[in-house]
Amino acid sequence: MLKATFVCILLLTVTAPAFAQNASEADLAGIKQAALDYAQSWYTGDAERMEKALSPDLAKRIVRTRDGRSRIENMGAMALVQGVRSGYGAKTPKEEQQADVTVLDVFGNAATVKLIMSGWIDYLHIGKVDNRWVIINVLWEMKPEKAQ
Image (cartoon, rainbow, N blue to C red; front, side, top):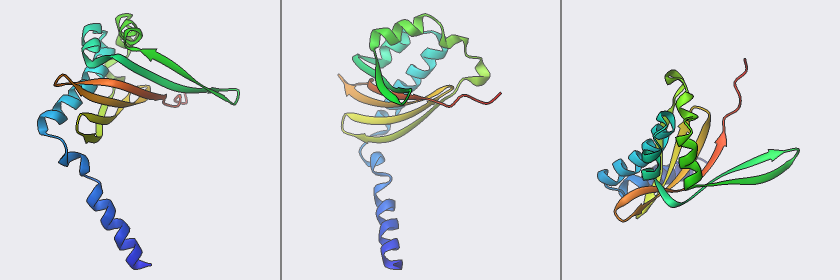
């Protein structure tokens, strides 16, 4: 039993930092910047900055479950840009604004990022398109309501 545990721990140690081996510092910075442009543009109402962070082919989705039935809601790039332009996110008080970026994996021109915002968590697929990192897919989930 001890031998099997050691092998599992060794395997996790070897594979955990794999993303760093496949990405340059410049790529990591570009990936993080795309995620921060997305988050900060929401909080500032900067639609141009949001549009710059997105692929025009963006697919943003959430799985909503009501009355025991699930359905997928979709949003495209322009709908998200219009949402930012409406200024709703800019109403978030500064002390509640959150944009915690964690790069989970990078391989070639593909990256997966976890972004924790004030009211939800986004899982971003970011791709390097024409030498620039842009968000291609987002799967998001609302955080539970805080008890008052």
